[in-house]
Amino acid sequence: MAVPSFLARERIVARPGFNRWLIPPAALAVHLCIGQAYATSVYKTALVEHFDSSLTAIGIIFSIAIVMLGLSAAVFGTWVDKNGPRAAMFTSAVFWVSGFFVGSLGIYTEQLWLLYLGYGFLGGIGLGIGYISPVSTLIKWFPDRPGLATGMAIMGFGGGALIASPLSRQLMNVYDPG
Image (cartoon, rainbow, N blue to C red; front, side, top):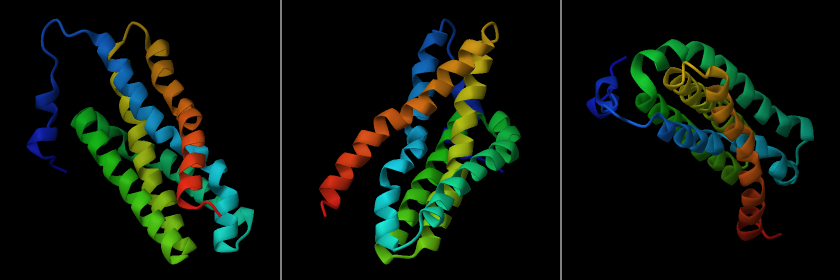
């Protein structure tokens, strides 16, 4: 699959003297964003009440997202390496945002299956592509320290819940104070 020229791998070659330590903060930022998936426990009770559903039915949303994370990471891993981090993160963002949009449409229309499709399926694909891209990029920039490189990216994924949990609570209070 061809990518637009502004996302092409050839356009992301670092200049001579580029400081490789500028890459980890970007990888951390990406993982902080997609790590929001771990904050689903904050709003699961509200979703149970909204859909008049069971905790199990709501928990399936997170399960689908995590399964899709693993599957899409496996399926798109070679594509990520071939096309580079810029195209991968653009694709990840499109899936992640589309997942949120379809999921929010499901909440608005009270259609749980749209939440499964949006947040679970589409968002999960975005998670998978967004998860592997920063990790593989850091490993290439830090071949002398692969463990450190992986750890720098992965800590952001867990840290995403640290940021997203209180933020989700605040947003729920603003938009659904009942």
